[in-house]
Image (tube, rainbow, N blue to C red; front, side, top):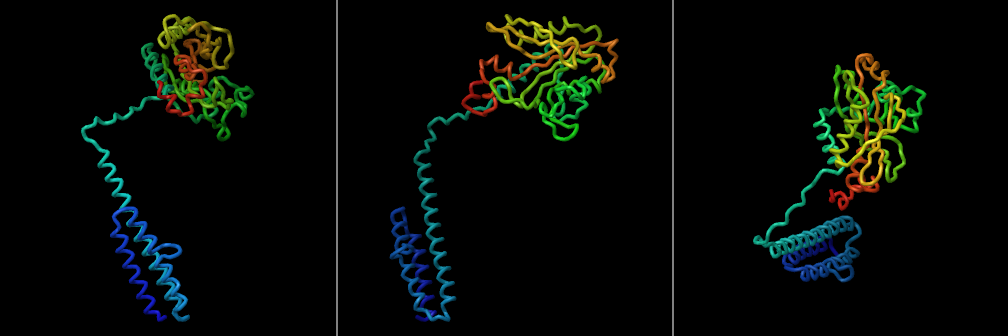
Length: 332
């Protein structure tokens, strides 16, 4: 077979295939056209391909190249026709299903995460008690996270197994007390602030612990501040956050940055729950930021926000707060 004869047959086949695909008005007719031209066994393209064996040997490269081009063109024409039919089907379905007289579907409104809700409510409560909100970095240096808080180098709290160190002298903060130090370094007494935010400790995740959690810490520095002021403030805070029948008790404890130090428990709904730690600011901390401990005293406290949130909503496992399960979060 002459090369020119073979190429003429290919061109005619391509034109006929495109005409057939364009003329197909439904899926059945398009499939019939596909089988006619692209069928694996008896398709017309397959029949023409057999003619390659009859082309002169010297002309076979050119014939083969043109055959591949025609094959690709026919396949592209089929895919284009198929896409047109699909688009038309979708458009007709939408037209049939659309009823402008039917009321629209109201979009579900988003809402704040329960931890964020709790933080905002706690800020509002402490604002009524005269405390302003202060913020600080989550990546801290050892001075603000340890030294200024009266935590010496040999203290177990500085162990690499108890912290997320990023580099020598640099870590993810393990408490929001670092914000208190930064505020006192830049502010003369009196100071009355709270700091809320994420803190990081390599704890094993369980029902009451998580390696990343949230704290609210408060600080009051002034002349004549006593433990009685601390307990009164925490009692007002707890009653505002929970209920009027809440009771507060102190248990002796130890923290490097407060002296004396206490664990704060809250009685509500028939049982005592540990809220966090508190105490009078240690004189060494006051000296570290340039305050005179002979002139000023103050108290500080730190509470776990996840525990407060869980207690208020009856959540028994704080891990639920971090799973991002919309079915769970939509309850709040």
